[in-house]
Length: 501
Image 1 (tube, rainbow, N blue to C red):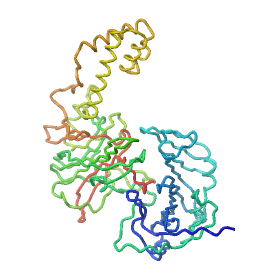
Image 2 (image 1 turned 90 degrees about the vertical axis):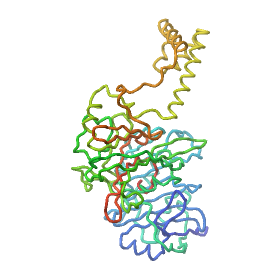
Image 3 (image 1 turned 135 degrees about the vertical axis):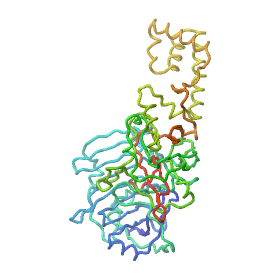
Image 4 (image 1 turned 120 degrees about the vertical axis):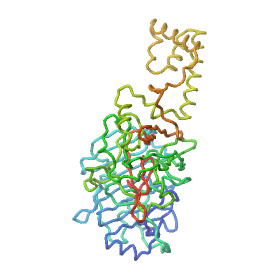
């Protein structure tokens, strides 16, 4: 009979994915006292002196035990979340898995970026599949057999982690011997990088605005680096702040302003971008916008809280829920302004003829892409005029767009294509469309943001992309150590914060 394999436990506050190390090392007796009191702590179980296998996040006062499984590269790609029942059993409530990009699984979907299974019971679960570009599909069916096998586990006593360690495929039924790693406790306390389930918490808000910070994006989990850009000021004559989808400006009322105002005045604003440049994927995603109260610039934010509107009650929120900005009007952007802007903005945007170019504009990358599309269109049009035929007609129709795909197959369609090709070749590029009202226009404050001045009140409307384009965004209110409002942040939730999962 083989001798048990030796593994060791490291008690800590949690795991830092940026450094791939446990943070806030705790002594075993400190962790034991927290376990008895129901306070949160974490346990990293690793091979003796070697690779991490399982991270446990425990908070018995919340009835919570999270289990992260590491792969061979030290990445956390599986997360099981258990709730402790009254009978002492742990019941699986949710499981998430991120595909291993280095694995060549048979039949694997290359576009799949995350699978989430919300377990109702052993016969029924909701399977959510998230794909590149933000698509999601949901199927309600029986959990897969591998999940059925781990739906329940006995709640472990302190130090008896073998039953949860067995969830790791490299451990399974293998006999193990667990010991304390004896790691030296950190001399200074460190904040826990995770929280037990509850309403969405302001985890990592400050980190969104620290240039050079290394993070992963929430959908693809590709590594990226934070850039921070100054985008001018937000003018707030009254301090009553509206944060909304600008496509709803024609109907929004002053009652939708945040309950806690900012001091009146002009306050500096910064925009955070998560940028990834690599062989597999390149992107630049707006991670958030932060407005700092002018008179408190440089004063640290001691705490963040959810910014609420009248009638919103934090206590009614369920696990992971939040009040924030719904981006459901098709604009794909978030706007921030003072309620003093509303009369003029409702005049501008209350009409169906309003032009979103006022708000969105065109980035440098978009302008470069349009120029390349124009060059390709002219080349295909010239080739079609020089040698009319089925293949050249198809190439020109493809350059025009998907809606023209059927035109090369009819006489009328070919005639239309010839006229369009002649027009493309013999006319100048008309350029990008201008706003319908040439007297009013927003100015670029960065490649990702615009500011529209409202001259009557002296306020301005600042707009920026809503992360992946359609997801709701929480709004956080920052306070200084003496309780004063020091900052406001819109979080587009493109930065992966595993402690929220």
